[in-house]
Image (cartoon, rainbow, N blue to C red):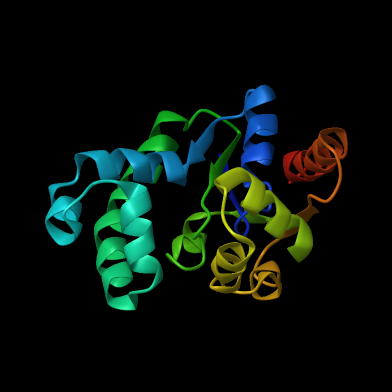
Length: 184
């Protein structure tokens, strides 16, 4: 089984790539969904923040690095367990994907054979984030700028997919990478 990670910074189009892969019947693990499940069921998160509401917690940790580290210490080990469970359940598949936005930050890159980085131009990501999350331009810029720069992550990745056009173009680019992966 070839384990492939998908990552990319906020509003780069990771979810669009996941939709394409699912449409092609590939098994896909989504760390954000796993995190949501953990959030809803975590007494530790509630005790730390007084809520299990992800948006409220996100606002807190965005400006408090200590709380962010505490949150990551709760979530990352549980996401890792769920990821390994996914690998086990799909062990008969030749190729599996896992969308993990914080792949490098969480140190999960070591669990994968190949890494695909999804990227899009800064202005396009900004536009998507404002539209998708109803953020102000200033807040959207803060969110984008708070992440590790794409160039640093691209250097650690095996493949780069630029998501700067329409859905058909993105699908063609994804299919090119899949063909390359299947030849390994």
